[in-house]
Image (cartoon, rainbow, N blue to C red; front, side, top):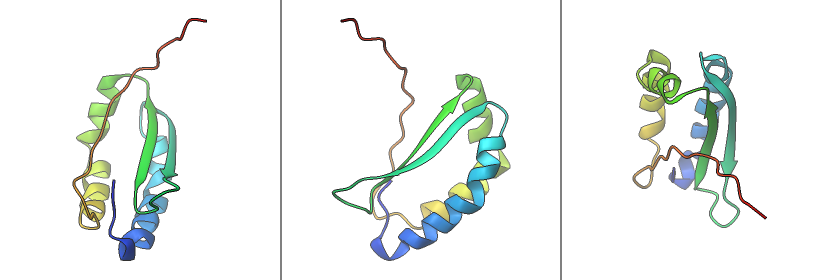
Length: 91
């Protein structure tokens, strides 16, 4: 997510208000916030979910909707999201 520079502190406040609730959401096993070194306006949430269904339940929850409503107004660019799988690399 790329935020307007003057809105970063507002996003961090939203994240800090929500992170404990997201971590406690059914199926969430990990949540962390990452910020790029080259452009501090770019921030990622990194989360692990027990299953795609758990993530979808969160995406349709009131918690997500209220958090997203507060977050999306702070963007400076279109947000992107990915669901990825960890792959084992052979030696």
